[in-house]
Image 1 (tube, helix red, strand yellow):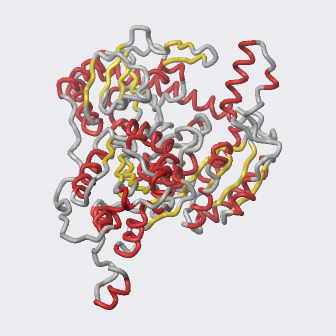
Image 2 (tube, one colour; image 1 turned 180 degrees about the horizontal axis):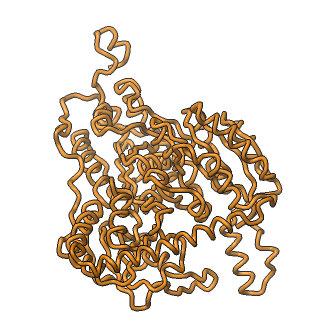
Image 3 (cartoon, helix red, strand yellow; image 1 turned 90 degrees about the vertical axis):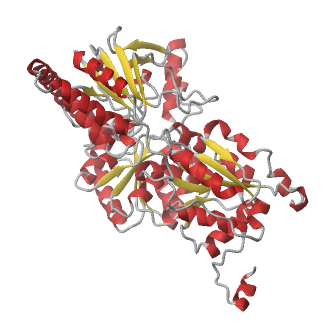
Amino acid sequence: MDDLTRKKSGVAANYRGWQSDIIVDLIKQYDFDFIPLNPGASFRGLHDSLINYGQNEPPMMLCNHEEIAVQIAHGYAKASGKPGACILHNLVGMLHATMAIYYAYIDRVPIFIMGATGPMDEGKRRPHIDWTHTALVQGNAIRDYVKWDYQPTAIDGVPESFARAYSIMTTEPQGPVYMCYDAALQEAPLTREIPLPPKSSVATPSPMMPDPRAIEAIADKLVASEYPILLPEYAGRRAGGFESIVKLAETIGAGVWDINNALNFPNKHPLCISLDKGALKGSDLVVGLDVKDFEKATNELDSTKRELTPLVNADADFVEMGFGEVNISKWSMDYCRMQPCSVRALGDTGLGIPALVEALNKRIDGNGALKEKIAIRKAKIGKRHDETWAKWQEESRKNWDQSPMTTGRLAHEVWDAIKDEDWVLTANTIKGTLRKVWDFDKPYRHPGVELGTSTQIGISLGVAMAHKKAGRLVVDIQPDGDLMFDAGALWVAAKYEIPMLIVMYNNRAYYNDWEHQIRMARLRGTDEAKAHIGMDLFGPEPDFGALARSMGVYGEGPIEDPKDVAAALKRAIAVVKSGKPALIDTITQHR
């Protein structure tokens, strides 16, 4: 029924008359907050339904690239704890988005990805374009790195598959799902009532409790250990996870190494040993808390020779609580090297850690010798923590007035500007430098590190969307090479007035790879001075301040004199507090 017919018949503009309207009803029922997308004709039926039937609620967010759309949903879900959603245009849009989908998968982030294809009915395909943009089966291209994909063949299959996809997506370990809707299915009139899932139905199964016997076994090992350490990776993402890890550490007197794929532990807590490799030496028990990669944290890496040296005792015991091999990929090797563990408690740390604390308290209560042992260990770890923190402050201020500025000075300048605000760091920590200077005291301060080049700005926008209503000052320490991939995201920030402070960590290079070439030159005795070839971002140097202004974002820079940074930050923060994005381009040394 077209709009003219509706007006003549007195039917409301949001009359449910098309099969794509059912998808809109489901989007509303499952309470997605907004939908990033890059437009495409394959979902023109759904697009019309979202606007005219759904009244653009939840609102669509136009993005310049499908990768940005997925990343915004990624950052939002990671920071808010609510699943994100996005729409991708048939085969080509999905292929554009593949890297962002893969990163969401390995980061265990729930994103409901809606796609489109076809029409699968050959008689309804437009010449050329509908053929070249259609695949059989389209979801096969990303099947190895989504939790589930499905393509309903009729409108009757849409509600049930939507509900199942949501349930799969939000069940731990979480991850993206892909639902592909035939273009002809979307555009067909709705000729009969299609029942939706009951609103009373449970969207996500209750979390899985680890085996109580395994929890008791871990408690026994913690009590017997001389120097246990806790190794959390994703546990801090659960509601209350940050606080429960603090409680566990304080109960047993264990040092905590935060792997930082979520903020698991306050970095200034006396029991925090993160980034202090020496603090791992002598450990006889490592307790993994929803860990995928034990190896990187517990070994010293010689990157040139690809050789590892263990930092914990050679005979150290390993135990874990988390999801182990649940949802392990058959394709990518993001599961990392398997760590042999004497106890493996399969289940949710959100339930398991409080149970472990309870089991420990039963063993500690009334045991004076054990209490004294724990107190001595806590004091020893705390003393090392304070000494290490003081050393880091001194090191980060070296070469303070050099230009271009050191990363240590950049860390301090930004911290001095934001420390009295209710702040959030979106992703990049400048290889841990910020964790050695800033005070990460609340679980929402940092949703976890970025995942690779061309992920930072999109994820950061999603994080900023998650904190917009709370009025927090969201800070993106933005690498230059990363922004060159998807600078169009700045336009998205301006269009939707996403308040975020973007501070360029601009060393005018893809320096991570430049550093690898320096290692190769030293190993092989070749010319180290040529290591920058194919890595540098100068000659010409991008002007990110001008780029920001061209997109409608407040922009300053490039700033090469570190004395000018504080005033620029003050001006940019005033813009962000007015509800708009701002970028300052700060030039830093290589590292």
